[in-house]
Structures are given as structure tokens and as C-alpha cells.
Length: 622
Image (cartoon, rainbow, N blue to C red; front, side, top):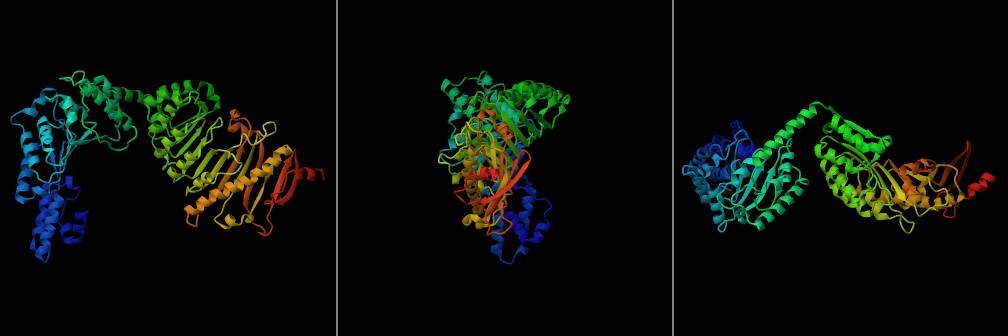
């Protein structure tokens, strides 16, 4: 930023530069040219200003220097001469040792002897590093790993300075680093006592992230089996616990894997492991060439009994890596997905719909959670069935910001809790359509925090709530249907203080009078829920909330084992709440009744608490 600002204040200076870029990639001749231009007298009228610009440029250009491992001797000599000529060794804060991606460094076990040869440049490098007075960071991003001499020197120096060291291992060089470090003359357990190595970063190529996972997953097979000398038992236990923690962390962190732990990931046979992985990938590529790329997979209720067989058969003939839409409307045992999850990662999946049959409870949740943590962030997610609240709260941080449509319909009297709904509102900030099953309040009144939290989703346009009312309606009556309230909102806030500006209209099918009487409470509850949601949107929108185009409230009654879809098909009444477009002085509602082809119309005051639906029986008789 400083150099950018410096060059913008000197147009003539920037026009003379032919190469610009990151400081670690800038050649030394370009840095010298910049300093040469700053040293000219015609850059300013005040010599003190020139000196300030010159010292500032020196600190910026030489605070971080890069040395190529393949040309260590020449680069080291060049930097020594340059820093001595400029007298700026005290400005160096960060030394980075890198290796080109196309240079393999050592090949085979015989090359490791170069680390201890007399003519090796490493002793000179160690002395030079220790002589830099202001050095704070040393980054090792190369193939050979840290030589034993450098490890010993930095360990001895740690008591006198605050030097930190980072070892960067990428997938293309990890085998070489482990191979070299396992052949250090010291016991591998001695690396546990290196306090100055504060972090390791496992960087991975976007196209090859599975190699690191596979190496660490297979690590117990290679744990010091061939390393000489073998570490003590307690050291081995520490290493195993540490690598187990790393393996679990790899599934959570995206981008660069970082761990603030001592560096002791050593085992023999890493080179053979990578070769075997390459062979497996080649075999996988051969199989993929024979398969078709499947973009969309939908399993309906017709495939419910043979879901496992269908998935496994199609996995042998199709490539799921190109899958965009996966819709399993048939009830799926998530353990049937385990073989597919081991082979495919669904990198292009955007829409996922699962009708989960978690017969084993948390055991099946493991496979569901594995699927949702493996796929890339989704834009549409629909889960029907018994899903643990902990699973939902674990996947929301990963998929929440990309989700536009979310449907969560649990079964067996397991509606979503307030904590899950609050998590949805906090993570799914760009959600546009939401369908949930929420609890029935114990006191037959809505829970304002629940619906207020839903209203805080600023971009929400459609909200569909299924209220668990299995204990509210008498089960011996015709309560196996549904009553749906559709609320159409606008940005007028008058209704919050004056609900008389709103009216209720709708259609209903023939039901028993007892069901009518219970519905009078439902209508009042629907308006209370609607007001709580809209208050949340009003506060988030700071007086100008985004339009919520539709909101449906469906009290679910009957037996939960029948499923929500079957309950909806059983029939019921449909209520639609909208603002009156007629005279605001008349707060009435028009209710249309359809019964065996007969059509009747009546009206009543929406907010008349004494109103009873038995009046319809009287009208029908009269």
C-alpha cells in the first residue's frame, strides 16, 4: 500500500517502471531501479524529504526477501552483497525460502547426505540468518525441509530472540519433506521440543485437495514403522493424537490448512503412499471415461423400497461429480449414501432435497452430516424427516450465506426449537424462501421471539410455517386436514398499532362444527404470528422493510406418522389474510363456502372475539 501511494504521488516515477507486482516476486534489479530514481536530486526540492522517501522505500522493498532453494548459494551471495552495500540488514523482518514447482530437489534416499556435506551452503545460510538483527519470521516453503543444522541453530537462538518459524507443506512436496526429516540423525521425538516452530500450514491445490486428506488418513499404517531410531512410546502417542486432530480439522477449514501445533508429522513410506494415490487416481480416471456425466438425479416414492440398489447401480454407470441437482423424495437410508460419499465429492451440487429415513437416529445423522460437510455450499436445501438439531446447527455456518431456499420438515413430533430458528436467522442472511415446522406454544399463544427472529431475515420473500398442533385439535374429530392462512404483506406499518386495517377472507370445505369452533383461536393466532414476523422485518429494514410477498401458516393436526404430505392431501380450509382495498371503515371479511357444488357467502367482523362459526349452521338452515 505504501509503494502504491508513493508511485501515485510521483507520475514520472511510475511511468519509468516496466515491472510491478508483489514485493516477493519483484526482481532485485527493479528494486534497485526504484531506489536509484529516488536518489536523484530532481525528485524533490528538499533533501530531507528525499532522504525520508529513500529510507521508506528501503524498508518496504527489503523487509521481506525471498531465496530460491534451487539457487541457494548464488541468491545468498547476492543478498549478502546487496544488504551490505545498502547497509539495510536491520530492516529485514521476513526471510522466505521457496522452491520452484518444477524442481524436485532430491530424488531417492542417497541425496539426503547433501544436508551434512562440508561444501553445502546451509552453514553459511544459518550464520547469515542468525546475523540478521531484526528478523522475526522465517517461512520454509521448499522441498528439502529444515536441515538438522538449521533446526539446531534456531533452537539455540530461541532463548535470545522472538524468531518464529513456519513450515509450509504443499501436496506436491509433502512426501519429500517427510522423507528428509525422517532421516535426520536425531530422534524424531526431539522435534516435539522445538518451541520456535509455532505453526504448520498445509496448503493444497484447488484441484487436488484429497491428497492431504488421504495421506493423513493413512498415516497410522506408516507410523514410524521404518524410522530409525524409533521414538519412545509416549512420543508416539502424542503424535498419533495430534495427527488425529489434524485429520478432523481438515474437513472444516477451507483454503489453507493451518494448525498452531509443534511440527512432528513424520513417518516413513510417504513417497510410496503418494505413488499409490497416483495409481488410484489413474484408475479412477479410466473408469470415469466410460461413464456418462449425470447432471440431475431424482428418486420418487416409486423407488422407495429399492433406494440403496438404485443408488449403487447408478454409481457404477454414471459420474456423480457433475451432479447439479439431487432430489431423493423417496425415504432414503443415509447409510446407502456412504459408498457414494467415499468416491464422489459432488463439487457442482447446488440443489439438494432429501427425505431422510433415519431409522438408526444419530448413526444415520453421521452420514447426513458427512454429505452436507462434503458438498460445496448449496443454494437450495430441503430436508424432510428426523434430523438432529445439532446436525442442523453444524451445517448452517457452511451453507447459510449461499442458501436462497430452505425447507426443514421433521417428523414424529420433533418440530424445530427456538435455538435452531435463531441460528437460521443469523446464518441464512440471503434467504428468500423458508419452510419450517415450529412448535405449538403450550399456552395456545405464539412465541414472539421465534417469529420475530424469522422476520429479521432481510431478503425473505416467502415464509411457510407448519405449526405442530397435534395436541390442540380433538383427535376424535375430523382434524386430519389442515388450515392454511396466507398472509400478503405490504410496507404500511399502520396495522402494527391498528390491526383493523386488515381483513380475512378465504375458502373452506365441509367439516364438523367442533372444528369450526377451534379454528376461531387459530385465526387469532395467525394474525399474532404475522404481526411478530413483520415487526422483525420492520426493525431490520429501519422503517422500510423489504416486501414479504407471501406467508402461509398451516396448523398440522392428526397423526404424525401419516406424514405432512399425506395430511395436506386430506383436505381442509384455506384462509387468506390481506389488506382491505375497499373502505377502511368496514372491517369485515368475505368467506366463501364450497359444499357439494353449493355456493354461499357471508360476512362477519374479523376482530369480533365473540364470533363463533356455529353461525354458519344457522345461516345454512335459514
